Length: 249
Image (cartoon, rainbow, N blue to C red):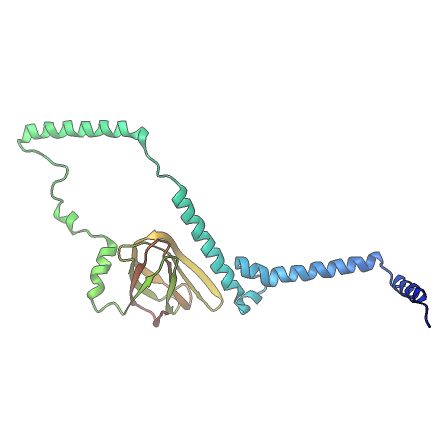
């Protein structure tokens, strides 16, 4: 029968025959560091920050997830700063403004004494001024004309977002007008396609917008809206001009 003490001695001798050399430890450390670096670059950076130096994140969808995370974090931070920042009250300028108003009133009284009528700062506006209108209002007024090709409306719950894009060739120009119908939304007007991306304009707590969108390259170009208010908001978009079709959920 084999003595257990002899077995333990043989086991210790076998373990001691495996050398733990400095070179082996360095190689193990380098392999572990390389594996951690690969995981960081291939998966963690695209998923958390939308940074994709290798292109693997774009193939797996991790880059888009990271970009959405960053956009949500930026919106939340901007909303928090806007809520925390108190409105500036120009108290120092108040005496100067009151003095200027007093001088204007004195001038108006002198003019009325000469011409025999009471001038008013709130009189009827000239015809040319009355004819001028806000660009957004003008664009909304044109909504009933046949020049608009598409119209869509979406009701967004608090915190909800939606994306609508136009399929466009490079250089094509589309006209648009959108409104939050009495509310406000955050928006990002951007484009993507053929491995390219572009951000045309961004805004926060915007009630409406009108203008033209010229495609920087062939692909999908349009808008992402998010409702950061505490109540539902209905977004209505009308488009016209040069584009293949409107792509909406």
